[in-house]
Length: 155
Image 1 (cartoon, one colour):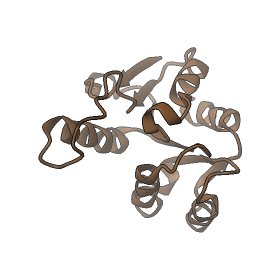
Image 2 (image 1 turned 60 degrees about the horizontal axis):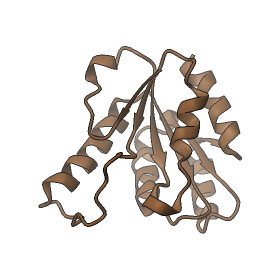
Image 3 (image 1 turned 180 degrees about the vertical axis):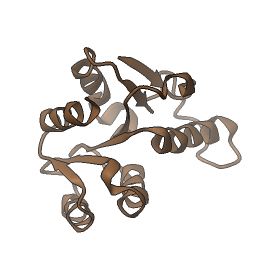
């Protein structure tokens, strides 16, 4: 398993089956579910694209004019496009508006790439479930179920 975190380069590893870990981060609020998924996939010959940047600076202005912020968002968009699978996790402890935006981008564009886990208690679970049902997007009830689905797809 090779894991690349934003903004690390990953192009040389795109020959491997790959997964982008989209979902709840909200630094300090969401559990580090990406680390849990990475541990579960550790024995596989895969590329994990993880947007959870180790040195995020919460003081960055979220603006197209901020080079550091722009680099992060561009890395995420490029990595989602490059990945064979996009795993989306909606934590009940978060709002995750960016993940909902990303779900909207891929629900129409490439629904077969998605595996979505939206647990009970997420504030817009109904919306997420309806979008997934309408577009035939694979859904998992738990993070463990999502990992099992990812393993099957990445083999």
